[in-house]
Image (cartoon, helix red, strand yellow):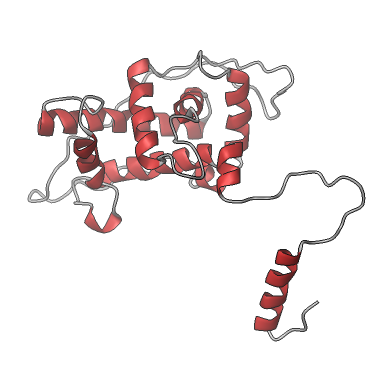
Length: 233
């Protein structure tokens, strides 16, 4: 990995592992029941990627002397598609850079290459999903997802991005999309840029004596107390 060190991705991995977006569900959901014959059927196929046999780092990684015993497993084509998807899900705006600018693909490569059960379940689901994206694009547009136009890519994502519109034959692909989006968000909001984007003010030391809560925090507390019929502070 040339553009970002694995020491950084290891710290990122540890931070994201504690987040609710990433840890929601301990494994990828099981495939749904087959759709009725008349339902539209996607080109989804559950892949069985090669098993990761490298050891893990234990319960408490040493980030001062990082040693990551597992190799990265995604190829450049897969990383490229993840960068495209990251920019579609997390485009740059006035507050923060895009998902690809923050190297979300590097975080995901670390995540899917780790030997733990959750990460390996995600690995199977996401690699199957990346293959599905290419298959849909080739059938619809005669090019791979990476070669497709932005409008064509969005047409494929629109098949699975909105729960109320997902057809029965695309439910497994929709599960892939939901999980990929959660991982993208988990990675993004574990970084300083993502934390700043939501305006989080914690995890900063206060020099000297604690000055007390800021006025906006007190105002929020008092509004909540008054709503509950309690005396404000």
